[in-house]
Amino acid sequence: MSLAHNQVIALQVGYSYKDASDPTAMRANCSCTLIRCRDGTNIIVDTLTAWDGEHLKSLLAAQGLEVNDINVVVCTHAHTDHTGCNYLFQKARLHIVGSCASKRDLYFEHPSALDTHGEVLLEETPGHTLDCVSVIVHNTQLGGTVGICGDLFERREDIDDAKIWKMAGSEDEKRQADERQRMSQLCGHIVPGHGPIFALDAELRSKIENYVKLGD
Ligand SMILES: [Zn+2]
Image (cartoon, rainbow, N blue to C red; front, top):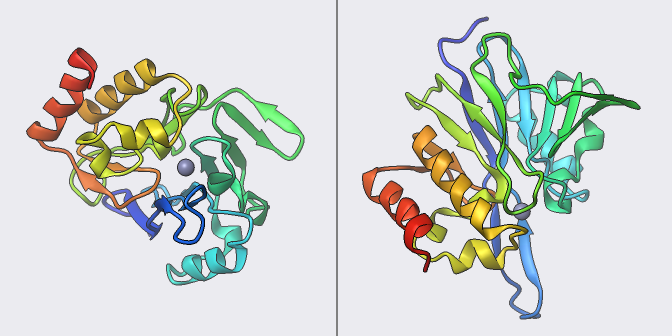
């Protein structure tokens, strides 16, 4: 079956908040996203923690998929809440973790397109870590381009309060601010690392742009 659009599906919405019993600790898990490409390629972006294997299998089953149906694994960066279940996807042709692309013990050049139509692209978006990547999905069921950006954006609220993305950790705040602006211009919707998908509008884009120009 070939699809009219690339489908971006939230398998699990990410979260992050201070733990109730230990205020020095955080509770966090990533936004875990499935892309069903028009050409039949199935891509999973960010794979939860290592304790989520059975849970992730059930999330895929709800989409009619098994772990062996996933063709490409992308982790936006190498933190443990984004890479934990990579081991499930033994039939994938490629595992990409940040700037590293491999299958078994074979390491490849970083690919740009992940589908045969050239509509699902891998982009370097440094900041949270220096080798963070995002997946840009054109021609989606939402009517435009979706950026699955990992922790480049923590959640929608970090556009109004930059402390949120900075306190989540940034290896280069200047580059992260620049990449946030670039992605906000390129995409109609963003899937942030730890929150629900959100739409960009002129007001949000100008806030992101003003941050680059003026800072806090
Ligand atoms: Zn994260």
